View 1 (cartoon, rainbow, N blue to C red):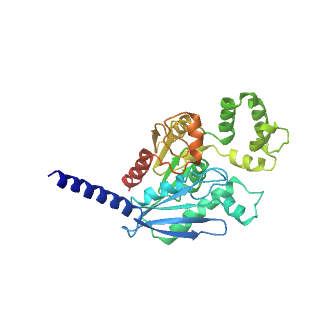
View 2: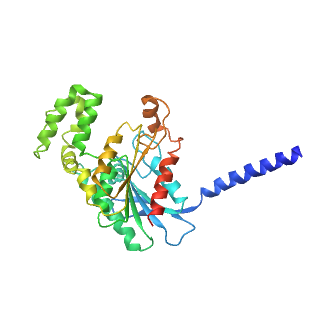
View 3: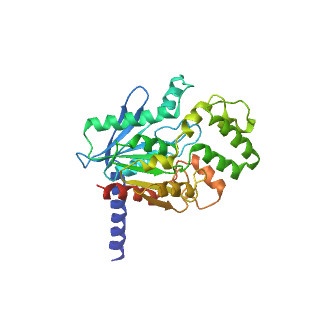
Length: 314
């Protein structure tokens, strides 16, 4: 009898293991070029002829389709896409245009925030023209939240913001400087005041060069003209806003500002989730290190919230 029980347990374990492996191939994968600027990966569930499509838009910096940049590799957007597609939601995630330019050694120094919006619109329209999807949702992470809001208007069937700011970028940065490097607060406010007049300035502390480098000031001026609260009000579609309590870059308060601005929005705060969707049990050091720990799993709660939102709205 004891041997029989052991064999049953072994069989159950093997069946569970094999079931998990099968989930990894529950979709087909195709790399697609939308245009000269946008390359991405489409995951299509095997079980449906006309699935819902979720377009995933990455955050700031030279972020690729998987959510990685430079020496920071979390694969968070890749993991999100695979989890959604394993639950019968098609996904398309793409490299920001700057990624392709870096690979080709031909960086456009005049790139603007609006170029990212143009790219997102191109992606939505590309897939709408295929008529292969029952609905199209836009998921924007971090900076991609604002990009996605602007692109989704009158084009998408639903919008999901993950770790998206509720204020314009100048106010977000001022808040961050006040918390992390208070001695530069007044300089930060002064430079932004100058930029609000549509002027660039070389007069900033060297410590703030990553924000105010003279070459990126035009990009920042273009970005800061958009107030996410005003933009989200214009969306007449189902909206989900997600933020984590351990997000070092975008606070829960930012998510609440978005929720207050939209009657169509649902808000989900995920305990202990950080900016790259990992659950952090420890301190800020663990949090920061996790950005380059691709072996971590993204939050199950965040994923299930997104899946339930998309499915229940259709």
